[in-house]
Length: 170
Image 1: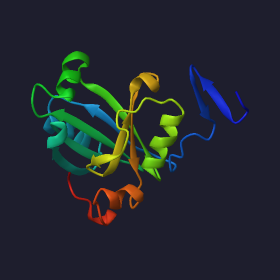
Image 2: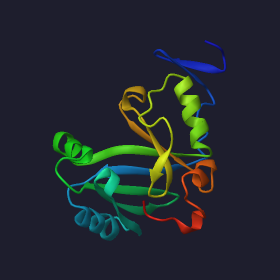
Image 3: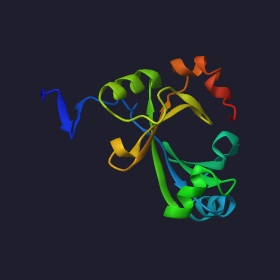
């Protein structure tokens, strides 16, 4: 082990491993009823609702609420057979994943794979708010980690996002 890295089990990770652009993009929770959860977060907690969107590719309906410089994502399944529905059935409502913002998602995925991190997505895929990819919880101490590329990064053009100010629902 060199002084510039740290051993995490079988994984050697550089100490400057993940440039997170200084923020957590969002924390996601799975909920049974999106409308009730949105009302609670907006009316009781006072978090402004940013958007609600259907994500057919994931068989979910989501809501983003603003929480300071970060967001809360509420995720509800749209059927009883999706991955999120299975998660809800086995684990109940609650924490689902942590999303970190990175400058260049493809470069980060290559670096993480080379460090032995198990990737769910080997390349960025289309997300509601930009290019995303997930890291397997087995490599992240039981936490599902999502990476999202900062607005205007290299994968934005490749995936056809265009102007970050004109985000479109995927």
